[in-house]
Image 1 (cartoon, rainbow, N blue to C red):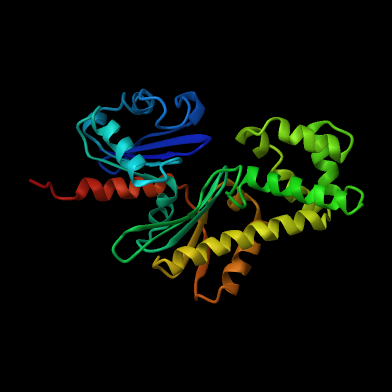
Image 2 (cartoon, rainbow, N blue to C red):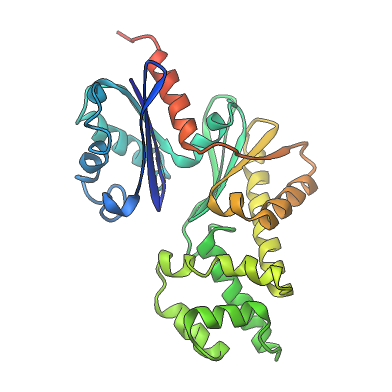
Length: 299
């Protein structure tokens, strides 16, 4: 048996296969089992394993978990060790962005995830991980839903300081927060700087661009440019592959951002082809679990 887990910031999907047949495919809110950050509570692993524990053979299955929040070697090792301590089967843990390339059926590709957060990942020829971005919604994560909302708020304030009346973006944000002017909007936006609070108005950036907001359009374009810059960074640091695979809720469902990102990556003139992942990232976890299961035993 093999088990693949895509552990995202908002949703956790688990797929288990036995003899080539899917015996479990379930999605639950990550908040339904994860307390705090992934490594904050030692019982998070126990609650995660319960999601597929009832399946026969689960304890000896080969398991691959791609997890949001595993951003350093020590975090990956700590999480893997916590899982291994509770079960007998083989375990591989990695950042969830690393599921993208295998989900697309590629060994070598640069992966760009843009959803609740954003991160760009590649590998050197020696399979060393090279990353850019993913430093959190307060400072970074370009193109992510909270990142877009943050940059939209800054752009609306810039327009206000120029003496311009609110355009569609400003009006939509004011309506979302239930306020009547830009000053009140800035207070409402900054009063509750949580990921969920800032992520909620993110889609309004695209709605506003569709309604003709030049400010919203510029916010999207700048986000695409920063994501492309991160692609260039990982390539300059040795990441291999001729393809860039994009995944995540925002980039998947917002063609404006994908089109802008494709244009900015083409402008890097690195000979890269840009693709949108057409299968769920959990397919990458399953593919890696299959490879892990088939590895010969070491003695």
